[in-house]
Image (cartoon, rainbow, N blue to C red; front, side, top):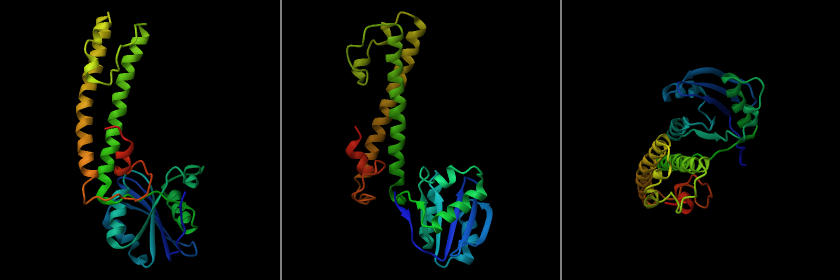
Length: 239
């Protein structure tokens, strides 16, 4: 785990939410300069940090709304640190927990060199990575449907299917093996959904391949084994 340990004059910890964010700014001695709730907008952020822009670092926990915050900091030349959510025990393990306390703890962690870092993914490839994550979500849903068919077969103590149902050609006549009409209907629904997932997943995979090998999109973190990287994903994903 990497920790951010650069020294700055000002340290800004943000407990970020969709509509609001609690901002805490400390000086090098740990004195609180700002500690208040503001709207989650670029304008509000720049306004609250304006008096402390000199040698400022902004830190926030890795959650789904951090993209815009990282982009604003990059555009304004402000150092930005993304905290690794699972490793930030000081926040998740605290008995007393609210937005005000969390923002102060984030600022204190980054000031003390104890903030575990998450990788700030480049803006140009975030959408491709999100597509890979979306594909994984659909693959898991499809897998659940296949598992439901197998579980239903075992529930009625029927013989094992002769071929793997993962392949469309092997799914013909599967529902006919169940005598009960309601069970057959349930299996038909599963099969129809699987067919739709097959189409969606294939379309996503083709898009991901085109985006990930585009010459304008070099590997975001060369040498990294981050499975969320599109280039790494192309190595281990079964397309």
